[in-house]
Every structure is written in C-alpha cells, then in structure tokens.
Image (cartoon, one colour):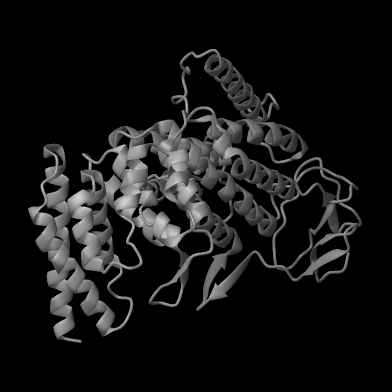
Amino acid sequence: MPADVSICFPHLGIALENLRKSFSVFGVEIAYYGVIIGIGMLVAMLLAFRDAKLSGQNVDDYVDLAIYGIIFAIVGARLYYVIFEWEYYSKHLSEIINLRNGGLAIYGGIIGGVLVCIVLAKRRKLSVWRMLDTGAIGLVTGQMIGRWGNFFNREAYGGDTDSLFAMRININDPLVSVNVQDGVSIIDNSYIQVHPTFLYESFWCLCILVFIQLFKRKKKFDGEVFLWYISAYGFGRFFIEGLRTDQLTMGNTGIAISQVLSALVLIAGVLLIIVNRVRIRKGMDTIFVGSTVKEDVIQKAMDFAKDAHQGQIWTLSDGSDISYFEGHLLGVYHLLAKIPAVNEEMLVTALLHDTMEDTKVGYSDILKKFNRDVAENVQWLTKKAESTYYDYIDELLQNGSDAAVIVKLADRQFNTENLMNLGDEEWHEKKIDQAKYILDKFRMRKVRKEYEGIKKQLLDAIETDVADLEENEKYQ
C-alpha cells in the first residue's frame, strides 16, 4: 500500500491520499469527527423541524427538544461508553471529558435524547409518543451522518474481509495514529483490510429514514414511527455489531452489549407494533404506546391545502423563495393554534381560507372533503373578483360565521406582524389602511361569548402592529 494512501477500497477503485483526522484554523486543531457530528445534528434538526411544521405541531417545542436533547444525548453517549470502559477510565479520569478522540456510544445518546423528550412532553402536556415519532426522524438522520466521523478517526471498523466493500487502512500513516484492534490481521506490515462497518450502519440508517418518510402517514398509533425506528435499527445493528472488533462487552463475558440491547429493542418494538395493530383492528385501545390515530381532520386539511396550492411561491425580502402553503397558510394556522380557546373548525378554516380564491378548488370540492360549516367559512372568506377589498370585508361581517371572522382577523394579524417588510411604500400604505378598516369594523361585530377573548387578543395585536408600522413609515 503506497505510503501516501491513507484509506482505500481496492475492489471499488477508490483511494484517498493524505487523509487527516483534523484540520487547523488559526492554530487550533479541529477534529473532522466533531465537524461531522455537528453537521449531523444540524441536518437532523432541520428534518425534524420540517416534519413538526408539516404535521401541525409547534416547531418551538422541537427547538427546545433539540437544544436540551443534543446536550443530554452527548452526555448519555459518553456516560454509556465510559461505564463499559471503566477499567480504563478509572485510571485516566481526565480522559472522561475528552471527546476529541471519539468514545460516544449511540445507544447512550438515544437513551439521553428519549429521556429529555419524555420530560419536555410531560412538562408541556404534549404527547410523548407523538414527539418521539418526530424525534425519530432526527435521531436516525444524525446517526446516518455522524457515523462518517468514525471514518476519519479510523475506528468502528470490523474484522478481516475481502468482500466488495473491503476497506484498507494504512497503519503507518504519518498523519494519523491507527489503533489496530485485536484479531485484525496486519498485511505486509503496512495495512489492515477490514469491514467498513461505519459505512454499513450509515447506509442502513439511510434506508430506515427513507422508509419512515414514505410510510409515516400510514401509522396506526402515536409512537409507531419510533417503534419502526428502534426495531429496524436494532435489527441492522445486531448484525453489524457482530462484524466489529471494538465492541463494548459485558465484563469478561465477551458478550457485546450493543448486540444484546439491539435484540431487546427489536423484540420489544416488533411485539408492540403487532399487539397494538391487532388491538386497533379489534376496536380496542392501545397499550403502553400513544393513542390510536383516527382520521386527523387537521392533517387532512393540511394535505388538501398543500396540494391545492402546489407551485405557488412567494419570494421574500431576502430573495429566498417559500411555498405559499408554508409561508402563509401554515403561518396563520400556527398563530391560531397558540390560542387555547381556538377550536378545530377555526384551524381547518385557517388552512383552507385562501383556497377558493387562489386555486381551482371550488365549494363542492371542499364540501366533499370537509363539513358544510368549513365549506361555507371558506366561501365567506373568498373575495369576489369584482368586489373591492372593503366591500368584501363588509359582506364577511354581515353574512360570515364567527369562525370565519376570527380566521380573517388571524390572517390580518399574520400579515401585519410578518409581511409588511415586503413591497414598496405604496403597498405598505394600502395594507396599513386595510388593517385600520378591519380594526374599525371588526370591533363592532359581535361574536359568540367564548370567542370574544380570541377576537380581542387578535384586534389588540393588529392595533399594536399598525401603530409600529406607521411609526416606522415616518422615518423611512
């Protein structure tokens, strides 16, 4: 093996020369391991946030979950590793907090992240199992990417092999100190040729992620996606762990801890999936996991609106593009969803409120999918082409339902709060004038007693926004 080749895959014709495990920035050594882990965390968060947003959950809850989850996942991953390597760390206590050379056990990270999820969900009165479903997407993504940190460290490899994916590691590489595991053969006193188990696991995690993304809407109960994840991961990890030469073992038994844990989570996950699916089919309640997922009207409205507005793009002030569905309809929905007294009719109406005006969807299309109240709400919220904006508002106030009135107020607050930085000065003045008209007219409109608090909250927010906008206009 040439001295300048660090790693190669001989049967694939791939050779990497002078591959370091770190790089220097202003004299500070930064390990690729840490960079890869950081990238994995970032991508994991983005996918989890996206899933939370599209499924109607509050993304802020997942921001907090990510912050605390990452911290305690790292702590858990390190503690797990240190506990089962205590013979070494008991004599080198200062090394316990040194993560630069690796030493993070993924199962410890999963346990730490799950515990944070449970605590956060309980404190905020959210569904633990629903959060775990969304969190599973982030976990498997982080694992998929993070495993490549082992590649740069030349660790987490398997035993000798001459298979298609056999990986040769230069043990005399002057750039990296390679630790040759017991039982691995050294060839020509220059390299080892082993299973790239990091690659196997990364690819397996990719398969799990694709499966989850394709079938997550088919779940029968909250928690099923998480069970898919731990079952599939446990299955793959059991066999991959059997190829490794650096296993954490149970004392002197030689039994790999990760294999035992993988078998347990696989059995538990599959049993819970089967048992609860059978119970649901028989009309019984689920056990241990979250509640049965019935036809979710909110999710149905999201899917319907997203499909109807397909291809409609907004260009924001920074030049970036966002779909109208995500930029506006979901924005109004989330604004209302934060108000405790808001009901399902309002939330569904918020998701559909511009559909008849901006797409080819008609009243009968909405009526087929939803109830008459929702269809009429959307019709009342649809401005006729020949009407002025002010005539449209007057008609809504005279004929529209209370739910439609509330949704229109939420739509206006979302505009004043988020979208006034778009357009030119004339556009701003027009929007401010429209908001003032709404303030004058809607205060006089009576709504049901239980909606008065929502109405007042939205009107007060719009009034504050208008005052701020007028003040800003003076100094432009």
